[in-house]
Amino acid sequence: MSQCLICERIEMIKSCTNRYFVKELDTGYVVIGDHQYFKGYTLFLCKKHITELHFLDEEFRRRFLFEMSIVGEAVYNAFKPDKINYELLGNGDAHLHWHIFARRDGDGDVKGPVWWTDKNKMYSEAAIPSEEELMVLKEKLLSELEKLVF
Image 1 (cartoon, rainbow, N blue to C red):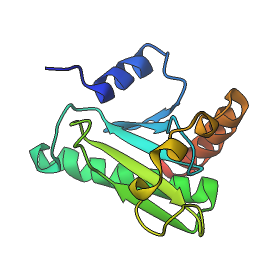
Image 2 (image 1 turned 60 degrees about the horizontal axis):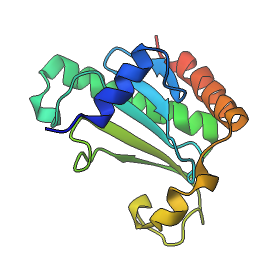
Image 3 (image 1 turned 180 degrees about the vertical axis):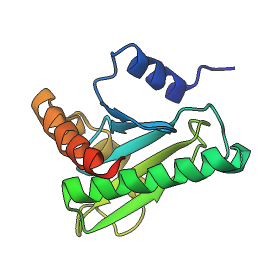
Image 4 (image 1 turned 90 degrees about the vertical axis):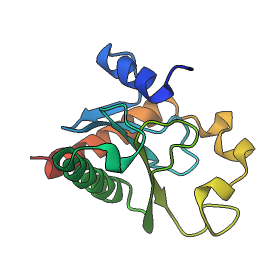
């Protein structure tokens, strides 16, 4: 069995080596996406290594879904997109994690899911934020999260 990438990223957060980490919530960790082709792309990583929502106990599941919506609201407030896209896939990394995309009119080659975007563009070196850009993204998102998380 191969190592879980999401668990590896969480271990990096715990060891203070994940440069994309923004904030810990009750049920998960908020991180800025490694690639920012869609400016403001954020992930919410579940603290539990679980593959399906319905495998979570009811109380944790409700809290996880609520917190995901708070992260989405913070992304919206921080980055001022036209629309937020939420995706919980897991085919590549079978550990619950939300992809939260800040979408803007005309931000992609085609109108539709981000996954229709040319992977060479989406994951290009140009889409990796500089240290300065990453700090700005993290500060904006953290500021909005702190307004919403109580």
